[in-house]
Amino acid sequence: MRGESEEMIDLLRDKVAELGLTNTVKVIKTGCFGFCEEGPIIKIKPDNIIYVKVKFSDVDEIFEQHVLRGHIVERLLSVDPETQETYKEDKALGFYKKQYRIVLRNCGFINPEDITEYIAVRGYEALAIVVSENTPEEVIEVIKKSQLRGRGGGGFPTGLKWELTAKHRRSDKYIICNADEGDPGAFMDRSVLEGDPHTILEAMAIAGYAIGASTGIIYIRAEYPLAIHRLEVAIKQAKEYGFLGDNIFESGFNFNIEIRLGAGAFVCGEETALINSLQGMRGEPTKKPPFPSEAGYKNMPTSVNNVETFANIPPIILNGPEWFSSIGTENSKGTKVFALAGKINNIGLVEVPMGTTLQEIVFDIGGGIIDGKKFKAVQTGGPSGGVITGDNLDTPIDYESLRSIGSMMGSGGMIILDEEDDMVAICKFYLDFSREESCGKCTPCRIGTTRMFEILERLINFEGTPEDLETLEDLAINIKNSSLCGLGQSAPNPVLSTLEYFREEYEAYAYRTKKTSYQIIGDKCIGCTKCSKVCPVDCITGSIKKVHIIDEEDCIACGACYTACPVDAIIKP
Image 1 (spheres, rainbow, N blue to C red):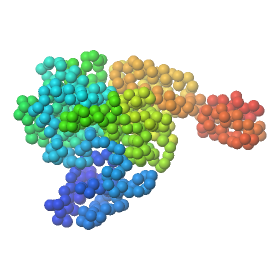
Image 2 (image 1 turned 90 degrees about the vertical axis):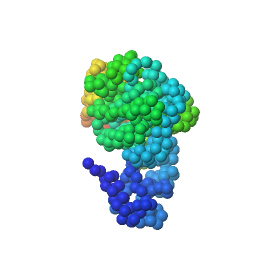
Image 3 (image 1 turned 180 degrees about the horizontal axis):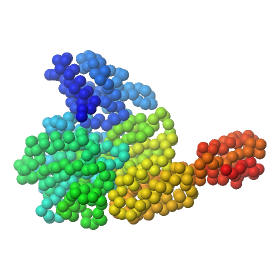
Image 4 (image 1 turned 135 degrees about the horizontal axis):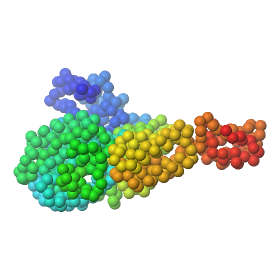
Protein backbone atom coordinates (compact mmCIF):
# COMPACT_ATOMS: atom_id res chain seq x y z
CA MET A 1 0.00 0.00 0.00
CA ARG A 2 1.48 3.34 -1.09
CA GLY A 3 1.71 6.16 1.42
CA GLU A 4 1.74 9.92 1.01
CA SER A 5 5.55 9.99 1.06
CA GLU A 6 5.68 7.80 -2.06
CA GLU A 7 3.14 10.05 -3.74
CA MET A 8 5.23 13.11 -2.80
CA ILE A 9 8.34 11.51 -4.31
CA ASP A 10 6.48 10.76 -7.54
CA LEU A 11 5.22 14.35 -7.67
CA LEU A 12 8.76 15.71 -7.20
CA ARG A 13 10.16 13.45 -9.92
CA ASP A 14 7.36 14.39 -12.29
CA LYS A 15 8.16 18.05 -11.68
CA VAL A 16 11.85 17.47 -12.43
CA ALA A 17 10.92 15.81 -15.70
CA GLU A 18 8.36 18.50 -16.56
CA LEU A 19 10.96 21.26 -16.14
CA GLY A 20 13.63 19.35 -18.05
CA LEU A 21 15.95 19.14 -15.02
CA THR A 22 16.70 15.41 -15.10
CA ASN A 23 20.41 16.04 -15.78
CA THR A 24 20.88 18.53 -12.94
CA VAL A 25 18.32 17.67 -10.23
CA LYS A 26 17.94 14.31 -8.50
CA VAL A 27 15.18 13.29 -6.11
CA ILE A 28 16.50 10.93 -3.42
CA LYS A 29 14.26 8.89 -1.14
CA THR A 30 15.83 8.70 2.32
CA GLY A 31 15.06 7.43 5.77
CA CYS A 32 13.85 9.42 8.76
CA PHE A 33 15.42 12.85 9.36
CA GLY A 34 14.51 12.51 13.02
CA PHE A 35 12.50 15.73 13.15
CA CYS A 36 9.15 13.91 13.29
CA GLU A 37 7.17 16.87 14.59
CA GLU A 38 7.95 18.83 11.41
CA GLY A 39 7.33 16.15 8.78
CA PRO A 40 6.94 15.73 5.86
CA ILE A 41 10.44 17.16 5.30
CA ILE A 42 12.25 18.03 2.06
CA LYS A 43 15.95 18.84 2.21
CA ILE A 44 17.55 20.82 -0.61
CA LYS A 45 21.24 20.11 -1.20
CA PRO A 46 23.88 21.47 -1.44
CA ASP A 47 22.10 24.50 0.07
CA ASN A 48 21.35 22.53 3.25
CA ILE A 49 17.86 24.01 3.49
CA ILE A 50 15.18 21.97 5.24
CA TYR A 51 11.54 22.60 4.38
CA VAL A 52 9.05 21.28 6.91
CA LYS A 53 5.39 20.26 6.94
CA VAL A 54 5.46 20.23 3.15
CA LYS A 55 2.15 19.71 1.36
CA PHE A 56 1.54 18.59 -2.20
CA SER A 57 0.44 22.14 -3.00
CA ASP A 58 3.87 23.45 -1.92
CA VAL A 59 5.87 21.55 -4.56
CA ASP A 60 5.34 24.06 -7.38
CA GLU A 61 6.51 26.95 -5.20
CA ILE A 62 9.61 25.07 -4.05
CA PHE A 63 10.64 24.48 -7.67
CA GLU A 64 9.68 27.90 -8.98
CA GLN A 65 11.33 29.84 -6.17
CA HIS A 66 14.18 27.72 -4.83
CA VAL A 67 15.21 25.21 -7.49
CA LEU A 68 14.95 27.63 -10.43
CA ARG A 69 15.69 31.00 -8.79
CA GLY A 70 17.61 30.16 -5.62
CA HIS A 71 15.10 31.99 -3.39
CA ILE A 72 14.32 30.40 -0.03
CA VAL A 73 10.64 29.74 0.65
CA GLU A 74 10.56 31.32 4.10
CA ARG A 75 7.11 30.09 5.09
CA LEU A 76 8.23 26.44 4.85
CA LEU A 77 11.17 26.83 7.20
CA SER A 78 11.07 25.54 10.76
CA VAL A 79 10.16 28.11 13.40
CA ASP A 80 11.74 28.42 16.84
CA PRO A 81 8.85 27.89 19.31
CA GLU A 82 10.22 30.55 21.70
CA THR A 83 11.50 33.34 19.43
CA GLN A 84 9.26 32.57 16.43
CA GLU A 85 12.31 33.07 14.22
CA THR A 86 12.83 30.85 11.18
CA TYR A 87 15.89 28.67 10.73
CA LYS A 88 17.56 29.14 7.36
CA GLU A 89 20.14 26.36 7.60
CA ASP A 90 19.65 22.91 9.06
CA LYS A 91 22.91 23.18 10.98
CA ALA A 92 21.41 26.11 12.91
CA LEU A 93 18.26 24.29 13.92
CA GLY A 94 18.03 24.03 17.68
CA PHE A 95 16.83 20.45 17.18
CA TYR A 96 20.10 19.43 15.50
CA LYS A 97 22.53 21.85 17.11
CA LYS A 98 23.58 19.73 20.11
CA GLN A 99 23.25 16.37 18.43
CA TYR A 100 26.21 14.20 17.43
CA ARG A 101 25.15 11.63 14.87
CA ILE A 102 27.00 8.32 14.78
CA VAL A 103 24.18 5.78 14.79
CA LEU A 104 21.95 8.08 12.72
CA ARG A 105 24.78 9.36 10.51
CA ASN A 106 23.22 8.16 7.26
CA CYS A 107 19.52 8.39 8.14
CA GLY A 108 17.89 11.07 6.04
CA PHE A 109 21.07 11.39 4.00
CA ILE A 110 21.23 8.36 1.70
CA ASN A 111 18.74 6.26 -0.23
CA PRO A 112 18.46 3.14 1.97
CA GLU A 113 17.45 1.01 -1.02
CA ASP A 114 20.56 1.87 -3.09
CA ILE A 115 23.72 0.10 -1.95
CA THR A 116 25.91 2.40 -4.07
CA GLU A 117 24.92 5.35 -1.89
CA TYR A 118 25.97 3.42 1.21
CA ILE A 119 29.26 2.52 -0.45
CA ALA A 120 29.76 6.22 -1.29
CA VAL A 121 29.80 7.06 2.44
CA ARG A 122 32.48 4.40 3.16
CA GLY A 123 29.95 1.60 3.45
CA TYR A 124 31.44 -1.92 3.76
CA GLU A 125 34.92 -0.41 4.04
CA ALA A 126 35.09 -1.41 7.69
CA LEU A 127 34.22 -5.00 6.80
CA ALA A 128 36.92 -5.04 4.12
CA ILE A 129 39.52 -3.79 6.60
CA VAL A 130 38.52 -6.31 9.25
CA VAL A 131 38.58 -9.46 7.11
CA SER A 132 41.68 -8.39 5.15
CA GLU A 133 43.90 -6.89 7.83
CA ASN A 134 42.79 -8.08 11.27
CA THR A 135 42.51 -11.31 13.17
CA PRO A 136 39.25 -11.99 15.02
CA GLU A 137 41.05 -11.37 18.31
CA GLU A 138 42.24 -7.96 17.08
CA VAL A 139 38.71 -6.97 16.10
CA ILE A 140 37.41 -7.88 19.55
CA GLU A 141 40.23 -5.89 21.14
CA VAL A 142 39.26 -2.81 19.11
CA ILE A 143 35.66 -3.03 20.32
CA LYS A 144 36.82 -3.56 23.90
CA LYS A 145 39.10 -0.52 23.71
CA SER A 146 36.25 1.60 22.39
CA GLN A 147 34.32 0.78 25.60
CA LEU A 148 31.08 0.45 23.62
CA ARG A 149 28.29 -0.79 25.87
CA GLY A 150 25.16 -2.53 24.66
CA ARG A 151 22.40 -0.09 23.84
CA GLY A 152 19.57 -2.49 24.59
CA GLY A 153 19.13 -1.34 28.17
CA GLY A 154 21.55 -3.28 30.36
CA GLY A 155 24.70 -1.60 29.10
CA PHE A 156 26.87 -4.76 29.07
CA PRO A 157 30.26 -4.19 27.37
CA THR A 158 29.95 -5.28 23.73
CA GLY A 159 33.57 -6.33 23.29
CA LEU A 160 33.40 -8.53 26.36
CA LYS A 161 30.21 -10.18 25.11
CA TRP A 162 31.92 -10.97 21.80
CA GLU A 163 35.00 -12.27 23.60
CA LEU A 164 32.94 -14.58 25.83
CA THR A 165 31.19 -15.99 22.74
CA ALA A 166 34.40 -16.33 20.72
CA LYS A 167 36.25 -18.35 23.35
CA HIS A 168 33.85 -21.30 23.05
CA ARG A 169 35.20 -23.62 20.34
CA ARG A 170 32.02 -25.03 18.86
CA SER A 171 31.22 -25.98 15.26
CA ASP A 172 28.43 -23.43 14.87
CA LYS A 173 28.01 -19.97 16.34
CA TYR A 174 25.41 -17.32 15.75
CA ILE A 175 25.07 -13.55 15.64
CA ILE A 176 21.57 -12.27 16.41
CA CYS A 177 20.34 -8.74 15.89
CA ASN A 178 17.60 -7.94 18.37
CA ALA A 179 15.22 -5.66 16.46
CA ASP A 180 12.21 -6.49 18.63
CA GLU A 181 11.64 -2.91 19.74
CA GLY A 182 8.65 -3.01 22.05
CA ASP A 183 8.70 0.00 24.39
CA PRO A 184 5.68 2.31 24.04
CA GLY A 185 6.88 5.49 22.34
CA ALA A 186 10.18 4.01 21.13
CA PHE A 187 11.12 3.98 17.44
CA MET A 188 14.94 4.21 17.41
CA ASP A 189 15.72 0.78 15.94
CA ARG A 190 12.94 1.07 13.39
CA SER A 191 14.34 4.36 12.07
CA VAL A 192 17.86 2.96 11.72
CA LEU A 193 16.62 -0.13 9.88
CA GLU A 194 14.47 1.97 7.58
CA GLY A 195 17.10 4.64 6.97
CA ASP A 196 20.41 2.74 6.97
CA PRO A 197 19.91 -1.04 6.78
CA HIS A 198 23.32 -1.79 5.25
CA THR A 199 25.13 -0.55 8.36
CA ILE A 200 23.45 -3.32 10.38
CA LEU A 201 24.37 -5.97 7.83
CA GLU A 202 27.98 -4.78 7.75
CA ALA A 203 28.20 -4.72 11.55
CA MET A 204 26.74 -8.20 11.87
CA ALA A 205 29.27 -9.53 9.37
CA ILE A 206 32.08 -7.90 11.37
CA ALA A 207 30.72 -9.46 14.56
CA GLY A 208 30.43 -12.83 12.84
CA TYR A 209 34.08 -12.65 11.78
CA ALA A 210 35.12 -11.67 15.31
CA ILE A 211 33.38 -14.55 17.11
CA GLY A 212 33.69 -17.19 14.40
CA ALA A 213 30.07 -17.29 13.24
CA SER A 214 28.91 -17.84 9.68
CA THR A 215 25.21 -17.12 10.25
CA GLY A 216 23.42 -13.99 11.38
CA ILE A 217 19.73 -13.66 12.22
CA ILE A 218 17.73 -10.45 12.41
CA TYR A 219 14.77 -10.92 14.74
CA ILE A 220 12.33 -8.14 13.93
CA ARG A 221 8.71 -7.57 14.85
CA ALA A 222 6.25 -8.05 12.00
CA GLU A 223 4.75 -4.61 12.71
CA TYR A 224 7.73 -3.01 10.92
CA PRO A 225 6.88 -3.75 7.26
CA LEU A 226 9.00 -0.94 5.75
CA ALA A 227 12.04 -1.90 7.82
CA ILE A 228 11.59 -5.55 6.80
CA HIS A 229 11.30 -4.58 3.13
CA ARG A 230 14.45 -2.47 3.23
CA LEU A 231 16.39 -5.19 5.02
CA GLU A 232 15.32 -7.68 2.35
CA VAL A 233 16.46 -5.30 -0.39
CA ALA A 234 19.74 -4.62 1.42
CA ILE A 235 20.51 -8.33 1.93
CA LYS A 236 19.85 -9.04 -1.74
CA GLN A 237 22.10 -6.19 -2.85
CA ALA A 238 24.87 -7.11 -0.40
CA LYS A 239 24.92 -10.65 -1.75
CA GLU A 240 25.07 -9.37 -5.33
CA TYR A 241 28.09 -7.22 -4.46
CA GLY A 242 29.82 -10.02 -2.55
CA PHE A 243 29.57 -8.40 0.88
CA LEU A 244 27.52 -11.34 2.15
CA GLY A 245 27.83 -14.97 1.17
CA ASP A 246 30.95 -17.04 0.55
CA ASN A 247 34.57 -15.87 0.52
CA ILE A 248 33.84 -12.24 1.38
CA PHE A 249 36.57 -9.97 -0.04
CA GLU A 250 38.41 -13.19 -1.01
CA SER A 251 39.28 -13.70 2.65
CA GLY A 252 37.81 -17.16 3.06
CA PHE A 253 35.22 -15.74 5.46
CA ASN A 254 31.62 -16.87 4.82
CA PHE A 255 28.65 -15.09 6.33
CA ASN A 256 24.93 -15.03 5.57
CA ILE A 257 22.01 -13.22 7.19
CA GLU A 258 18.38 -14.25 7.43
CA ILE A 259 15.32 -12.40 8.70
CA ARG A 260 12.88 -13.87 11.24
CA LEU A 261 9.63 -12.17 12.16
CA GLY A 262 8.41 -11.86 15.73
CA ALA A 263 4.80 -11.49 16.82
CA GLY A 264 5.42 -8.33 18.82
CA ALA A 265 5.81 -9.73 22.34
CA PHE A 266 7.58 -7.23 24.61
CA VAL A 267 9.24 -10.02 26.58
CA CYS A 268 11.04 -11.19 23.43
CA GLY A 269 13.26 -8.16 23.76
CA GLU A 270 14.95 -10.21 26.49
CA GLU A 271 17.65 -12.27 24.77
CA THR A 272 16.78 -15.72 26.11
CA ALA A 273 13.06 -15.24 25.39
CA LEU A 274 14.01 -14.07 21.90
CA ILE A 275 16.11 -17.19 21.34
CA ASN A 276 13.24 -19.39 22.52
CA SER A 277 10.95 -17.65 20.03
CA LEU A 278 13.47 -18.18 17.23
CA GLN A 279 13.42 -21.89 17.99
CA GLY A 280 9.64 -22.11 17.72
CA MET A 281 8.98 -22.18 21.46
CA ARG A 282 7.07 -19.82 23.71
CA GLY A 283 8.79 -16.48 24.16
CA GLU A 284 9.80 -17.11 27.75
CA PRO A 285 13.11 -16.23 29.41
CA THR A 286 15.36 -18.94 30.81
CA LYS A 287 17.55 -18.97 33.89
CA LYS A 288 21.09 -17.73 33.45
CA PRO A 289 23.69 -19.25 33.50
CA PRO A 290 24.18 -20.65 31.01
CA PHE A 291 24.32 -17.38 29.11
CA PRO A 292 23.69 -17.26 25.35
CA SER A 293 27.41 -16.70 24.80
CA GLU A 294 27.86 -20.30 25.97
CA ALA A 295 24.60 -21.99 24.98
CA GLY A 296 22.17 -19.86 22.99
CA TYR A 297 20.45 -20.48 19.66
CA LYS A 298 20.37 -24.22 18.94
CA ASN A 299 22.38 -24.58 22.15
CA MET A 300 25.36 -23.01 20.39
CA PRO A 301 27.43 -19.96 21.42
CA THR A 302 25.40 -16.90 20.44
CA SER A 303 25.95 -13.18 20.67
CA VAL A 304 22.79 -11.05 20.81
CA ASN A 305 23.12 -7.31 20.22
CA ASN A 306 20.47 -4.74 19.41
CA VAL A 307 20.24 -2.49 16.34
CA GLU A 308 21.74 0.61 17.92
CA THR A 309 24.73 -1.33 19.25
CA PHE A 310 25.49 -2.73 15.81
CA ALA A 311 25.16 0.69 14.16
CA ASN A 312 28.18 1.89 16.16
CA ILE A 313 30.50 -0.89 14.92
CA PRO A 314 31.52 0.31 11.40
CA PRO A 315 32.37 3.86 12.59
CA ILE A 316 34.49 2.44 15.42
CA ILE A 317 36.46 0.30 12.97
CA LEU A 318 36.93 3.20 10.52
CA ASN A 319 37.76 5.92 13.07
CA GLY A 320 39.46 3.88 15.76
CA PRO A 321 38.51 2.97 19.34
CA GLU A 322 40.21 6.07 20.76
CA TRP A 323 37.92 8.31 18.71
CA PHE A 324 34.82 6.61 20.08
CA SER A 325 36.02 6.48 23.68
CA SER A 326 36.77 10.21 23.55
CA ILE A 327 33.03 10.85 23.28
CA GLY A 328 30.79 10.64 26.33
CA THR A 329 31.57 10.17 30.02
CA GLU A 330 34.11 8.11 31.93
CA ASN A 331 31.97 4.97 32.10
CA SER A 332 29.52 5.60 29.26
CA LYS A 333 31.20 6.20 25.91
CA GLY A 334 29.78 7.32 22.60
CA THR A 335 26.28 8.60 21.94
CA LYS A 336 22.73 7.52 22.74
CA VAL A 337 19.66 7.71 20.54
CA PHE A 338 16.40 8.78 22.17
CA ALA A 339 12.84 8.90 20.90
CA LEU A 340 11.42 12.15 22.26
CA ALA A 341 7.66 12.08 22.68
CA GLY A 342 4.91 13.42 24.90
CA LYS A 343 4.29 17.07 25.86
CA ILE A 344 7.25 18.51 23.97
CA ASN A 345 7.47 20.83 20.99
CA ASN A 346 10.03 18.88 18.96
CA ILE A 347 8.86 15.28 18.90
CA GLY A 348 11.42 13.15 17.13
CA LEU A 349 14.55 11.06 17.13
CA VAL A 350 17.68 12.57 18.67
CA GLU A 351 21.25 11.36 19.14
CA VAL A 352 23.43 13.04 21.75
CA PRO A 353 26.81 12.35 23.38
CA MET A 354 26.60 10.48 26.66
CA GLY A 355 26.78 13.06 29.42
CA THR A 356 24.38 15.49 27.77
CA THR A 357 21.96 16.71 30.43
CA LEU A 358 18.21 16.22 30.45
CA GLN A 359 17.90 20.01 30.54
CA GLU A 360 19.64 20.23 27.16
CA ILE A 361 17.56 17.43 25.64
CA VAL A 362 14.20 18.73 26.85
CA PHE A 363 14.66 22.48 26.36
CA ASP A 364 17.46 22.97 23.80
CA ILE A 365 16.85 20.05 21.46
CA GLY A 366 13.22 19.35 22.35
CA GLY A 367 12.21 23.00 22.25
CA GLY A 368 10.52 22.97 25.65
CA ILE A 369 7.03 22.04 26.76
CA ILE A 370 3.99 22.48 24.51
CA ASP A 371 1.97 25.67 25.07
CA GLY A 372 4.55 26.98 27.52
CA LYS A 373 3.30 24.76 30.32
CA LYS A 374 5.46 23.73 33.26
CA PHE A 375 7.75 20.72 32.97
CA LYS A 376 6.78 18.00 35.43
CA ALA A 377 8.83 14.90 34.69
CA VAL A 378 10.37 12.73 32.02
CA GLN A 379 9.82 8.99 31.85
CA THR A 380 12.94 7.24 30.56
CA GLY A 381 13.29 3.57 29.77
CA GLY A 382 9.63 3.07 28.89
CA PRO A 383 7.63 0.69 31.12
CA SER A 384 10.89 -0.51 32.65
CA GLY A 385 12.16 2.91 33.68
CA GLY A 386 11.34 5.60 36.17
CA VAL A 387 10.49 9.28 36.21
CA ILE A 388 12.98 12.10 36.50
CA THR A 389 11.76 15.39 37.98
CA GLY A 390 12.77 19.00 37.47
CA ASP A 391 15.14 18.74 40.44
CA ASN A 392 17.28 16.34 38.42
CA LEU A 393 17.21 18.02 35.00
CA ASP A 394 20.94 18.69 35.27
CA THR A 395 21.62 14.96 35.53
CA PRO A 396 23.97 13.81 32.75
CA ILE A 397 22.60 11.05 30.55
CA ASP A 398 24.65 7.94 31.26
CA TYR A 399 24.01 4.51 32.71
CA GLU A 400 25.22 5.18 36.24
CA SER A 401 23.73 8.66 36.68
CA LEU A 402 20.24 7.58 35.64
CA ARG A 403 20.40 4.53 37.87
CA SER A 404 21.43 6.69 40.83
CA ILE A 405 18.18 8.70 40.63
CA GLY A 406 15.91 5.68 40.27
CA SER A 407 15.60 5.59 36.49
CA MET A 408 17.42 3.76 33.71
CA MET A 409 18.67 4.27 30.17
CA GLY A 410 16.53 1.51 28.72
CA SER A 411 16.33 1.26 24.97
CA GLY A 412 15.84 5.01 24.63
CA GLY A 413 12.20 5.99 24.92
CA MET A 414 11.82 9.41 26.57
CA ILE A 415 8.28 10.59 27.36
CA ILE A 416 7.97 14.22 28.49
CA LEU A 417 5.21 15.03 31.00
CA ASP A 418 3.79 18.44 31.90
CA GLU A 419 2.02 19.90 34.91
CA GLU A 420 -1.35 18.48 33.87
CA ASP A 421 -0.23 14.84 33.75
CA ASP A 422 -1.51 12.58 36.52
CA MET A 423 1.42 10.44 37.68
CA VAL A 424 -0.81 7.74 39.14
CA ALA A 425 -2.63 7.41 35.81
CA ILE A 426 0.71 7.32 33.96
CA CYS A 427 1.88 4.50 36.22
CA LYS A 428 -1.36 2.62 35.71
CA PHE A 429 -0.82 2.81 31.94
CA TYR A 430 2.71 1.42 32.11
CA LEU A 431 1.81 -1.29 34.60
CA ASP A 432 -1.13 -2.34 32.47
CA PHE A 433 1.31 -2.73 29.57
CA SER A 434 3.79 -4.75 31.66
CA ARG A 435 1.20 -7.15 33.07
CA GLU A 436 -0.28 -7.72 29.60
CA GLU A 437 3.18 -8.41 28.19
CA SER A 438 4.27 -10.74 31.00
CA CYS A 439 5.01 -14.19 29.63
CA GLY A 440 3.50 -15.67 32.80
CA LYS A 441 6.38 -18.00 33.54
CA CYS A 442 7.21 -16.71 37.03
CA THR A 443 4.70 -15.96 39.79
CA PRO A 444 6.09 -12.58 40.96
CA CYS A 445 5.66 -11.04 37.53
CA ARG A 446 2.50 -12.88 36.48
CA ILE A 447 0.53 -12.36 39.69
CA GLY A 448 2.38 -9.46 41.29
CA THR A 449 1.99 -6.98 38.44
CA THR A 450 -1.72 -7.80 38.28
CA ARG A 451 -2.16 -7.13 41.99
CA MET A 452 -0.28 -3.84 41.63
CA PHE A 453 -2.48 -2.86 38.71
CA GLU A 454 -5.60 -3.63 40.74
CA ILE A 455 -4.43 -1.35 43.54
CA LEU A 456 -3.77 1.48 41.08
CA GLU A 457 -7.20 0.96 39.55
CA ARG A 458 -8.82 1.20 42.99
CA LEU A 459 -6.93 4.40 43.72
CA ILE A 460 -7.90 5.98 40.41
CA ASN A 461 -11.55 5.14 41.13
CA PHE A 462 -11.33 6.68 44.65
CA GLU A 463 -11.87 3.26 46.18
CA GLY A 464 -8.43 2.86 47.73
CA THR A 465 -7.10 3.34 51.24
CA PRO A 466 -3.85 4.68 52.75
CA GLU A 467 -2.88 1.08 53.51
CA ASP A 468 -2.92 0.40 49.76
CA LEU A 469 0.15 2.59 49.35
CA GLU A 470 2.18 0.44 51.73
CA THR A 471 0.98 -2.73 50.03
CA LEU A 472 1.81 -1.27 46.62
CA GLU A 473 5.34 -0.38 47.66
CA ASP A 474 5.97 -3.76 49.32
CA LEU A 475 4.70 -5.58 46.24
CA ALA A 476 6.89 -3.49 43.97
CA ILE A 477 10.04 -4.22 45.95
CA ASN A 478 9.32 -7.96 46.18
CA ILE A 479 8.53 -8.27 42.47
CA LYS A 480 11.70 -6.37 41.61
CA ASN A 481 13.81 -8.68 43.75
CA SER A 482 12.26 -12.02 42.83
CA SER A 483 11.20 -11.99 39.16
CA LEU A 484 12.99 -14.26 36.71
CA CYS A 485 13.90 -11.80 33.97
CA GLY A 486 14.42 -8.11 33.29
CA LEU A 487 10.79 -7.48 32.40
CA GLY A 488 9.49 -8.50 35.82
CA GLN A 489 12.46 -7.04 37.67
CA SER A 490 11.95 -3.62 36.09
CA ALA A 491 8.13 -3.54 35.81
CA PRO A 492 7.74 -1.93 39.29
CA ASN A 493 10.21 0.89 38.47
CA PRO A 494 7.59 3.46 37.37
CA VAL A 495 5.63 2.86 40.59
CA LEU A 496 8.66 3.04 42.86
CA SER A 497 10.00 6.24 41.30
CA THR A 498 6.64 8.04 41.25
CA LEU A 499 5.96 7.00 44.84
CA GLU A 500 9.28 8.58 45.75
CA TYR A 501 8.85 11.85 43.87
CA PHE A 502 5.06 12.28 43.65
CA ARG A 503 3.74 10.51 46.73
CA GLU A 504 1.28 13.31 47.40
CA GLU A 505 -0.57 12.40 44.21
CA TYR A 506 -1.01 8.84 45.44
CA GLU A 507 -2.16 10.18 48.81
CA ALA A 508 -4.64 12.45 47.09
CA TYR A 509 -6.35 9.31 45.83
CA ALA A 510 -5.76 7.12 48.88
CA TYR A 511 -7.19 9.55 51.45
CA ARG A 512 -10.23 10.53 49.46
CA THR A 513 -13.45 8.78 48.59
CA LYS A 514 -15.89 9.94 45.95
CA LYS A 515 -17.58 13.32 46.58
CA THR A 516 -16.12 13.78 50.03
CA SER A 517 -14.40 16.83 51.39
CA TYR A 518 -13.96 18.78 54.61
CA GLN A 519 -15.88 22.07 54.66
CA ILE A 520 -15.38 25.42 56.38
CA ILE A 521 -18.32 27.07 58.13
CA GLY A 522 -18.20 30.66 56.97
CA ASP A 523 -19.63 32.38 60.05
CA LYS A 524 -17.21 30.54 62.34
CA CYS A 525 -13.97 31.00 60.36
CA ILE A 526 -11.77 33.78 61.83
CA GLY A 527 -9.17 33.74 59.03
CA CYS A 528 -6.29 32.63 61.23
CA THR A 529 -4.70 30.70 58.24
CA LYS A 530 -3.75 27.73 60.45
CA CYS A 531 -5.72 25.33 58.28
CA SER A 532 -4.07 26.45 55.03
CA LYS A 533 -0.61 26.18 56.56
CA VAL A 534 -1.04 22.49 57.45
CA CYS A 535 -2.88 21.41 54.26
CA PRO A 536 -0.56 18.93 52.46
CA VAL A 537 -2.09 19.58 49.02
CA ASP A 538 -2.59 23.38 49.28
CA CYS A 539 -6.31 23.16 48.58
CA ILE A 540 -7.32 25.85 51.11
CA THR A 541 -7.36 29.49 50.01
CA GLY A 542 -8.03 32.72 51.90
CA SER A 543 -6.20 35.67 53.40
CA ILE A 544 -5.73 36.75 57.02
CA LYS A 545 -9.00 37.61 58.83
CA LYS A 546 -11.00 36.50 55.76
CA VAL A 547 -13.17 33.39 55.43
CA HIS A 548 -11.17 30.48 53.99
CA ILE A 549 -12.43 28.04 51.34
CA ILE A 550 -11.58 24.38 50.73
CA ASP A 551 -11.38 23.29 47.09
CA GLU A 552 -13.46 20.09 47.10
CA GLU A 553 -11.83 18.79 43.92
CA ASP A 554 -8.34 18.84 45.45
CA CYS A 555 -9.20 17.96 49.07
CA ILE A 556 -7.83 14.54 50.05
CA ALA A 557 -9.83 14.40 53.30
CA CYS A 558 -6.73 13.87 55.41
CA GLY A 559 -8.15 15.80 58.40
CA ALA A 560 -5.10 18.01 59.02
CA CYS A 561 -7.16 21.21 58.77
CA TYR A 562 -9.85 19.83 61.12
CA THR A 563 -7.23 19.17 63.77
CA ALA A 564 -5.52 22.55 63.32
CA CYS A 565 -8.63 24.74 63.43
CA PRO A 566 -8.84 26.48 66.88
CA VAL A 567 -12.50 27.50 66.59
CA ASP A 568 -14.17 24.33 65.25
CA ALA A 569 -15.00 26.04 61.96
CA ILE A 570 -14.31 22.89 59.93
CA ILE A 571 -16.69 19.97 59.67
CA LYS A 572 -15.89 16.43 58.63
CA PRO A 573 -17.29 14.96 55.36
